[in-house]
Amino acid sequence: MYRKEIFHFHEGKPFKVVVRNYQKNDSEKLIEIQRESFPPPFPSELWWNEEQLTNHVTLFPEGALCIEVDGVLAGSMTGLVVTFDPSHPQHTWEEITDNGYIRNHEPDGNTLYVVDICIRPLFRKYKLGKILMDAMYDVVVHKRLDRLLGGGRMPGYHKFSSELTPEQYLDKVVKGEVKDPVITFLLQCGRTPVTIVENYLEDEESQNYGVLMEWKNPFKRVFSLPKG
Image (cartoon, rainbow, N blue to C red; front, top):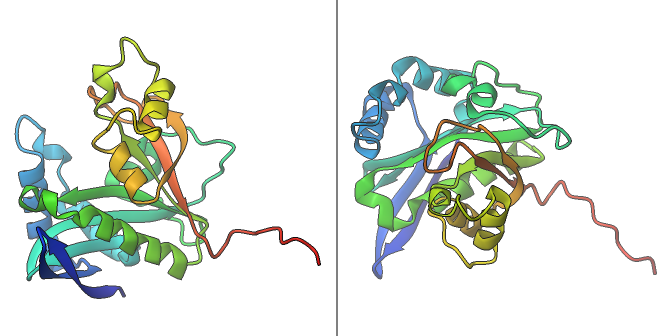
């Protein structure tokens, strides 16, 4: 099981952060974080529910991570293992995550897929998302998987959709000409774009598009060394 204790800084001041696997007895607090993060009119039935969280800690506990700040639960990140074929990248979030229930978790798969990452609004400026992402990279290395993969929303796209294709918008974000709240964050975490996915999830801001982004396990890459 995973547990990491570090000191993190916010506005120049250090504070203690613990990243660990969340447990069944964390469910109430995790649902509370979802409630704070996605208030009405966001439909409450889309928050985590007890069955989903039970599946996370039962089917793939290594992929159920949370972060505490001075003992306060501040966010979580969840993943499952799937078999990913780069030549057939198109899918929806519901298909690949079993709508968040992860009953399709494949212990012998090659890819850790991100189901969700959520930070409590009070801690949004603390850059805790990157700490969780780094912890999930640890899981990829520990499980000897090929990559971490996930579909990122691009919530800034609706402002440009009348003049730019999704590919053109993504290109501008990658070049730093446009800042997208999600895609820019994922780039800062070391993720790289793979492809645009149509109808990834119902999301008006992203025009239903997602950007499939990966982090490759550096210990599984093959390098061609020069002879001599």
